[in-house]
Length: 454
Image (cartoon, rainbow, N blue to C red; front, side, top):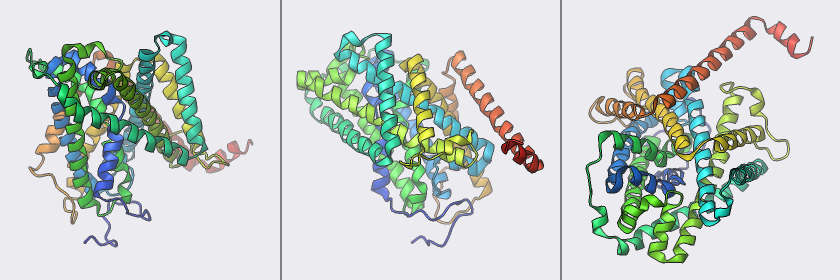
């Protein structure tokens, strides 16, 4: 039994009540990972790999398994809330933590924008007359504006949307898999050609979008019971369940639709549903997908602004105004409004695939930081009583690093340049903030006079 009075030197916070067990954390991983991406990606991946698309799921599952093993080890040593950001900062310091926090936010911004566009595409598949630029802008404005208002009013309102959408997304997916087997044609699953390593890499980079979320679920580490045992078990159960569900969905979709699956990229699972359940299935799956995606966007708007709020409060993310709390609703309203506005602008100018790749690239860099944290923390603190250690020495973190670099190598030159510019800007902001703080310490009286308008 773990003593509540024994704390790792890497723990920085206390006072949170540890109430989350194995199944609770596993459910959190599944809930935050299975989102809107799986409703639209089967056709996109099939277009690139055909019946061999399941190979991309296996490859992504392999990478996720390696990365989550690294999350398991570092999460059993650094058991405070904050997830990847906390792990990376504990290992490499404030600069690395600053980059991780902001890359995480960029990934969430582009993910929310991509899902919002996917919701609009689903609407257009039902109401073709809406297929215009102005209709898309108006829809995105109503979506982000409405969800921002719900979340400004209070956390309770935002959580209601999330709970409802969780049921709405899991029920149709499970029914599709369980009942769809009767309509699967074996010949549709036969590989017509062996996919190239390049095509698997390119499709896996897009497909990886559907596997995001487990890292967010681990941000409640400070509230997990017996984290050194609970976190490894929950990651294994959650990630295994997600991989099996995704592979079953792709298998049923290909088995039912065959080569025609690629013709329904806006709403592929709805078409699969119509083949299995008839016309009612089209409506059922479409509504489930739309509600799921809206819930996912709402969930991002519920959670990410609070990361921005906390960062602004701690001086990690400028400006300080982001740390303001609404006087009536007691919510981080400035952070919520800013996040929603930026997501709206990205959704307005970006297209789904580009936004997914941007989100994938940013989160892969965060994953790389976590993997490298395993190596650094082994050096800093090799023996933490009761912590989990990945078998095989440094084999897993090194393999995970190589696979992540391989994924990132499939970014185009323009995408790589964009990531480099983003990191350069964030670096300039961080050291600019450091310089301002140093000046404030040297000349506190002068800065006080400036603030008072003297």
